[in-house]
Amino acid sequence: MKTVPRIIVQLIHIHGPLMGTIQEFSDAAIEIGRHPSCHLSFPRELAVISRRHASIKREGNRFEIIDTSTNGTFLNGQRISRGFLKDGDVLMFTEGGPKVSFLTRMEEGSPSVDAGMPPQPAGVASGNAGVPVPPPAPASPSAPASAQPPSPVPPPPQDQAPPPVSPSPVAPPPGRVEGIAVEVVMAPLVIQYGPMLQSFKEVPITVGSGADCDVVLDHPMLVARHAQFFFSGDSYWIKDLTGKSQVRINNQPIETAAPLNPEDRLGLTPQGPTFRFLAGGRLAEIVEPRADIEPPGAPEKEPEPEKPRSLFKRFFK
Image: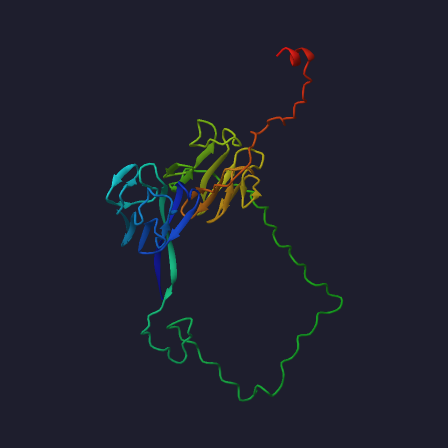
């Protein structure tokens, strides 16, 4: 049995009409443009984008961007006619036009079975190719199967108490982490927030509004040192540094820290910013409409009463 790995291309829209959208493709060629048949199809009214603007073609385990437009395609700010892509590259279609972040991930395909495989001989299980199945033991001539039924198991004596049942261990509540050391680990982490795209080769890193953080996010609900990303036990983790259970995974607050799984929805506060966690340590912002919000601790504003106008101002204004 062989598994055929395939590479999934992820295009994260960080600027333009599809901002916040994450598209995945497994095609050998990805067509980009305004034409409805394109894999990545921009709105028809976006005239700066050509009908067949560019294409991404796979060559082995590499991907090449090929420009076929009038207004140009830019790779990390440089106009190109073609070039090979790597994770974290930013593509811009026309100067000042839509931007996408290019990422890839490996996915194991379904097991492939050779069509010419000969039928399994007798005594070989279909789910365990090549492993012989022992034949059933012959029945004893002195005790045929129908001679007598098996003896029932006698019940325990009435004065004997049943053995005590050990209680099952209670799992700690979600988000509780004890005894996990946060150490420097070589693990990639990519964070996309608006037009910003930052990548790191090792963790831990801190996120917040303070200038001393590794990733500084301009959001009114974040505190100076808000959260920390680290890697432990083959998983990425998020740690809440606020002490107020602000960080949420799939809308559930975490107490201290919790692991991240692919497609988890990560909110740094109940009011955002919100990210989708992707395989391979990648975070893409989820853009949602939100009402105007006040920073933490801001007093509620009350409507000011209307002041009566004096007769002097009414007649001598």
